[in-house]
Length: 282
Image (cartoon, rainbow, N blue to C red; front, side):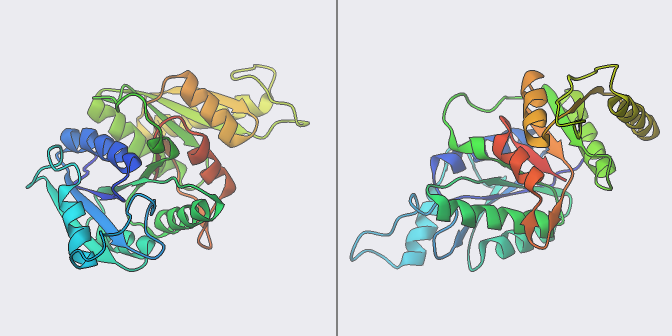
C-alpha cells in the first residue's frame, strides 16, 4: 500500500503555485498527508521571481516580509495542523531535497514555469537536480502555470509510461498503488522506436517490435500482479506519451526516474513539458 506521509510543496506565491497547492490538497486528503509549504529565498528569486517581488520601501526586514507572505499564502485553504510553513534560504534544489529527505514515504510537488529563456533554464536545472537527488517521487507540471478548470476531486485515470528499463518496476508499482487509492483505471504506455522513421499506430499487428513489447509488458504486469490497460506505439516518446495519455483522459502521468550528471534525459523533460496533466517521476 502506498503511503504519502508528507508532501513538500515549494511555492513562490504565484498563481501556478496556488494551482499546484490545490493538486497537493487533493492528494493529501486521500493519503492523510502532511503538507510542508516551502519558500526558498534565493537570488534570482525562486520559483517565479517576478511574483515574489520586494517589500515596500522603508518597510520591515525582508525575511520578516517573506515570512508574512508565506503565512498568508492560501491561509483559508491550507490550515494548520495539516500544513507546516517553512522559510529557508540558499540553493533551491538542495533545500527541497534535504527537507524531503527525512521522509521517503512522501512526494515533492513542484510548479515549474517561468518567463524568458534564462528563467526557464534555471527552473529546468533545478528540476533536474531535484529529480536526480530526491529520495521520494517528484510531481511536477508545466500546466500548473495555466488557468482553467480546478484539479479533479479524484483521479479517475492514471497513465504510467515505461521504457522496460530498470525504473519500470518501481514506476508501475507506484502508479498501481496510487490508482488503487483513488479507484482509478491504470493505463500502461510504452513507446518503441519507429522503423525507418515511420510512426506505427497503436496496436498494429504488423509490427513485430510492438508485439514483442506487448508480450514483455504482459509478463511484467503478471509478475507484479497488476491489472492495467496497455497501449504501445512507435514514434517520438514525448509526443506519443502525450497523445496516448491525453487521448485516454489521464488525470496524472507516472514515469520512471531518469537523470544523468545533473541533467534530465531529453525524453524525461520532453514528457513533462508536453504533458497535459501532472507528471510524477518515480
